[in-house]
Length: 379
Image (cartoon, rainbow, N blue to C red; front, side):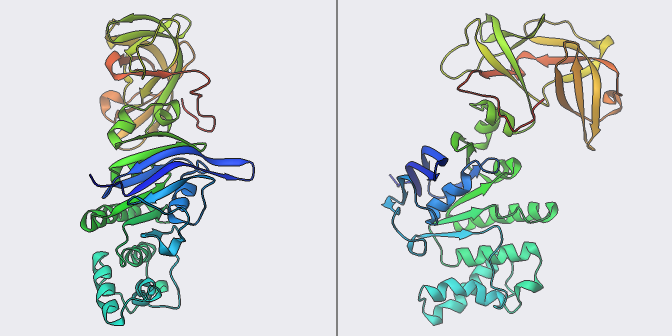
């Protein structure tokens, strides 16, 4: 059985009295495109720098292909790093920038030109070798940084927010390039990003961080469809997160009180066993779940279909979708995204019915161990 490409074993990092990465174990498989995802200050970049060797763990160790790298200096590790700032040498040509690491490693002069040419062709810059960084666009400079990182064929390529400095269109193009490059090279990519869409689109697996904690590791589908904590549910996608209490259950569905005389039937997906009557929970409603219909067309409510009354409090036209903020009669506000059409063109202050299918909503554990994220505004 092949060893994982990278293992972090009981690793943590503190700066003076601040623990920025709390003790965790993480295993990243060979050939994975793995993303470390979370908001600024959550510890993801510090973990990447410990893998690269730029930071020393306070506890634990880093293994690459089974070899302990904790005390190995960065330049001797079989990894390479692409920085957010590109870090190109402005006085060197593109070819000289790409060749720099090979020369520093003592590569035979006769091999360098061929390897540089191959690396530039990989990033579609085969004809740019004699230009200088100042003559290239931001996207092209990032391609050069990638070529310089992969020219030595590291076992692991580390990417620290590699696309955050690019505008939206170029960023999407570079996401496609990163995906193609990883498939062609077949080496392990570990990318730090705060962009959830980027992580979901590119990754085979994602690790979500919050306040130094490793909240969840899983495939993009698992992270989106089966979040384990309130933070993951809030951070991934657009989500309504409602406080509630279990008051009844029926097979795999539970009835949750979200306000005085306001109840929802939802799925019970709590990890560790079914919810019990009286348990505090969070009700998770992705913004595509609540459906809006004219009050006159409200369906009858039952254990499979919830139907609430609301007023259109705010709307935002997004082109193919329109976002609505729905103020329920109980005072709770829900956000929903609906396909834009003449039938769904509601106006401010319209009275509407909000339809929520029970099997499209679910609960997460509430309580001190699973606090609502403080810095996120979730309605």
